[in-house]
Image (cartoon, rainbow, N blue to C red; front, side, top):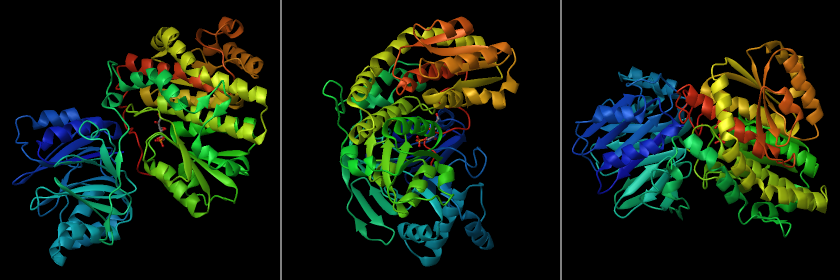
Length: 612
Ligand code: F6R
């Protein structure tokens, strides 16, 4: 949520920062801006996407070797030129960008107003910047000292980059709760919200921790804590290739990421699943096996699509491990004073590893003594680092704002965990365990088959129903959370109202919506609920609803009843969501395209929600 980029070194800074902003645009695209420090400080900013900023800067002076840039997801203040970052201090010498929220900005603003400060924007960021400037003037201290003093007063989350016209080669950065990575080059440094703007230049990075301040010059990186004590930067090597963050010939990231899934699932299984030998290697699980086997209960904590993965995990862990599971929205869990007892295991599920609600929920749970297992995609992210143990999904960078391959990666990790724990605990026998491993091993090929054989059918369904006002998505058992995920994807990408429901629950209310204009998507693959869902389909047909059914290949019963049918290969019901979700991802994509919408950057959304 908001992307920040900084550069100081021998190159022209503007193109480096601009390109970095384009890579981070998935984090927000309400406005963008760049501050360049040369002999003087120049700030260019514009409402809208980074391309609009780029156009507005054509012909202007962009020469500088130090710059900071920002792409915004609006919190305080509407998307507009004046609320765009960077902000310039009242005295004009400082410029700052910020990702996060300063919760006590209003009281600080009151103090500054009394001192006759004037504000050009509605943002909390400008308040913090003027606060820093005010401290600097009155305490006669350096910008770095003023920042440190200001941050001690600040309540909230931030990642800040600050430049000072009087010190044109230095960027001062600070982080609490919002991510910051620093790339180390030869005589140059790169700063960004994630590694994607950096990977092209260097693979050596430092992940800045909360409550740290970085003083970054071309040849020097100094890390300090808020108490002004020097910290030793921990330099890590990035395990990521540039190709992973480019579209690779696809028209959109979302489509590329849907089509990445045979490979991303395979990467998640690689080195872990040994189907023939009957083993699953997951050191995060092995090192904590007693705690996991003997868990009194598991609590899945997540948001959005990751929460849906948590719901599927509830079926997996209860079914295969006989462990009671609760699935919590992180935003509710963090404020509810939940009961956490010894023996509870919290499973945190997050693509970005930076979602603010999930992060704070985990911090609270940790304070209460919970054991936290992270299922995270972004390596080195805050949630990964906070977890006591974990397993990465290895899905690769997900750039499209709507989550697709990260979801299937989460399901694969959670399935492997459930199989391993269930078998070690004795709640599944050898026959079932071996069957599940063989089935899991075949998933990448089956996903590839769906993409090859069903995409055209999904596209024609999309064209047929693209103008519908509402959609209903129904499923039962393991496929119920898939129905929720299908509905969420459609809302996000096509702006069509959609609801997901357990198919049997429909008759307790939503059936009132059904008429000849309502498309109802049934996720109805072959499982123990099959006969029941057939009855639910008949209930919809009896009321003239249009039925789109995702069914198992070879199905003859539902295929006869439904208006449109999409086939997926057969799979054990515990793994069915990995297949049945693929047509639903494609359906939302193709409807978005048919409506000529920006599927990679849907309105009002941002990836990595680092504000609560
Ligand atoms: C939906 C989507 C969001 C995220 C949610 C959690 O397509 O992308 O609902 O799933 O914001 O994000 P992470 O998984 O990064 O914690």
